[in-house]
Image (tube, rainbow, N blue to C red; front, side):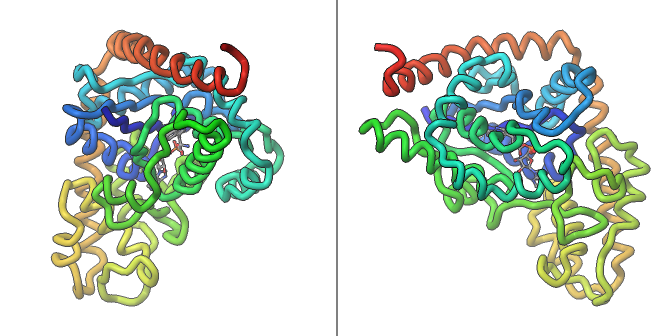
Amino acid sequence: MQTILTGIRANEEPTIGNFIGAYKTMINLANEHAADSRINMFVPDLHSFTTPIDHDKLYAQVIKGVKYYIAAGLDVNNPNIHVYRQSHVPAHSELAWILDCFTYFGEASRMTQFKEKSEEHADAITVGLFNYPILMAADILLYDAKYIPLGEDQFQHLELARDIATRFNNKFGKEIFTIPAPEREQVKFMHLENGLRIRSLTDPSKKMSKSSTNEKSKISLNDDPEEAAKKIMSATTDSIGKINFDMVNQPGISNLMTIKAMLAGQDIHDVITQYAGLDRYGDLKRDVADVVKSFLTDFQERVAKISDEDVERYLAEGEAYANEVAKAKLAEVQRAVGLIR
Ligand code: TYM
């Protein structure tokens, strides 16, 4: 059985960028493949404090993160679908240390996310932030996951996981780790033409980032729906004056069309045909704002109906499964490196 796996950090309120790039993609794949694949949707809670956070809020955010998975349509009652916390499966941390010793400082230093985040948090560049992609590699390799639905910003980390796994297998002369599929195959598996990257509403040359301090740049999943609609109405576009789907020259307008298609469950080509050549940006914005408003209203209602107790129960089940699989893989690795017989 193949494994499809992904995780979304719970340190900050996720945005519609995360929803479109990770939740929705993963859940569509889960619905499509749950009969013949293992679906692991975990919470990378150890990844939450690679940059400073409010630790008093973390536990509740992790529980809310799982509610988001369920509200977004993950069928946690399906026996092939598992939710679990990284911190509750100790093999993740143990494998991360071992993989650290098979990762070169130079290759880890090339990660662009580390460079960007260390600029943002210049006063607190931790070793954990540097190490982040290697823990991520452990998250993936412990479960022999082949497909890892991710937004475009994470493809470099996936490539690093592939490199580490290949190096490890070659060194020990056996297929200890399944090598995750390469980027192009992942994108095809996700039914996307390109990687997904929802842009900032105020600067569409950048991605919409949940850690941005500019509230207008992003729509968070707990935003008031009316406020969110206003943010769409004031989104930065361009002065070309004709609607075209062109991520290079008209990224703002194209981003809005993508958001509409993804949240309304429409084919992007239909959205493009509907608006192509029109000159009233306001009409498009109003339509997108309506879609965002009704999406958030509906999503937040669904979240409110899920109890903490239910989430704890799903996690306990998922963690029992994850510990069994991860421990067995870790033992194979420990044997290969000479820690056990
Ligand atoms: P995180 O929480 O930063 O991002 C979660 C997912 O959301 C995607 N994403 C976006 N997609 C489209 N447009 C955007 N503007 C946007 N912003 C974020 C990210 O690409 C990601 O897919 N390192 C992971 C968490 C993780 C993980 C793993 C994932 C840890 N271990 C193992 C898969 C497998 C991350 O970036 O989370």
